[in-house]
Image 1 (cartoon, helix red, strand yellow):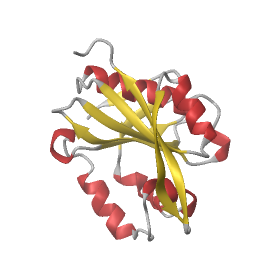
Image 2 (cartoon, helix red, strand yellow):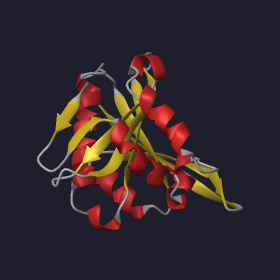
Image 3 (tube, helix red, strand yellow):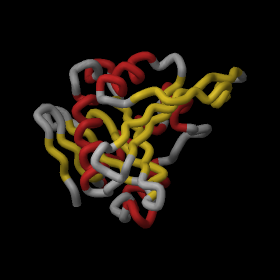
Image 4 (cartoon, one colour):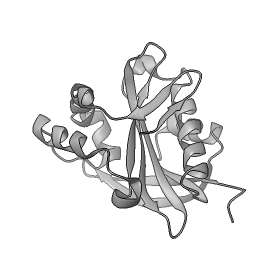
Amino acid sequence: MIELKGEKVVLRALEPEDLDFLYLLENDTRFWEVSGTQQPYSRHVLKQYLENAHRDIYEVKQMRMAIIGPDGDLIGLIDLFDFDPKNLRVGLGLVVRAEEDRNKGFGAEAIELIVAFAFKSLNVRQVYAHILEDNLASMRLFEKSGFIRTATKKDWIRWQGEFRDQHLYQKINPSCT
C-alpha cells in the first residue's frame, strides 16, 4: 500500500487500529454538514468499512488516507473521491480533527502530497474540492495550495433548515493533456 511522506506529515492507508479515531470523527456532528452524514455510525459499520478500505481506487472510485502528524499520531483524514478516469478528474476532501492541529501546515502538506500522487500516479488532469461559503479557513488553505475558485453552486447544501452556497475549487495539472 502507498505511503506518502512529507516534512511534517505522512499519509498512509487506514489500519484497523484507526477505528476509535474514525468513530469519533464520523460521529462528530461538527463535520456532518460537509460530509453529508445524517445519523451516527456504529463501530460495527466502521469496522466493516476499514476491512474494505484497501480496495483499489479504480474499483471503488475513492481512496481515504490517514494523516499522521510529526509525533506519530493520527490527526486527520484525506480523501480522493468520485475518481473519474475517463474525464481525468478526482475530488479531494480533508479534515484535521483537533483545533490544536490546525494552522500548522499539516493540511497544506497533506494536500500537496495527495495532489502530486493524483497527478503523477492516477494521471488526472484536475483535482477539485467543494467548500462551503463560510469555511474561510478551507478556502485560504486550498487557494494557498494552488486551487482556484471556479464556480459557486447557489443554495447547494441544506443544513438545519437553511440553504448554503458551496464553492467549487479546481487545480489543473498543466502537464496532462
